[in-house]
Image (cartoon, rainbow, N blue to C red; front, top):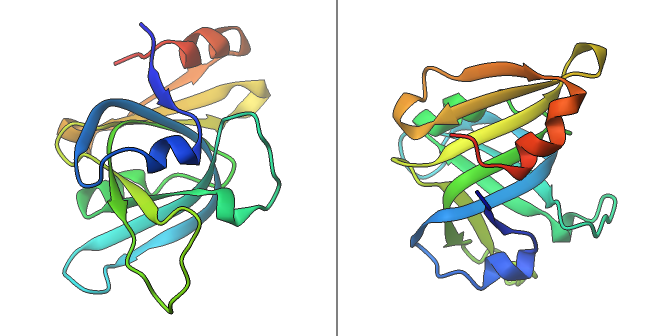
Length: 164
């Protein structure tokens, strides 16, 4: 099964705002991770990260080229294990406009959040002995993540296929 992967920020920018994109997948590397914390303007929690899309155009520490992912409330708790350097694969998301603050217009004025009822989050983390640990969280089972170890021989087929 082929994934409909968004590979560039300009591709993400073209998606309609506030509309669930259940068939789209975002694949990125976490570059900056911000701790889970209370939301500023309403009740609940937020966890967010800035990540570099895996488009092959590596620009080290080029933050204006990062995608911004926000996880709210139950998703904030479920995703808070993500660390810098992890590969994040989010199937199903919504693109939102960011509020304009201070008169500066950012190059990519949007952020991405999971669809609260149907997204799947898969995270690949470095494990022991060159293994990769996969943690998968689904919207309908946020409190029961699935964890498994992927040996080197399984990495490429795993990433290339969408495993539910």
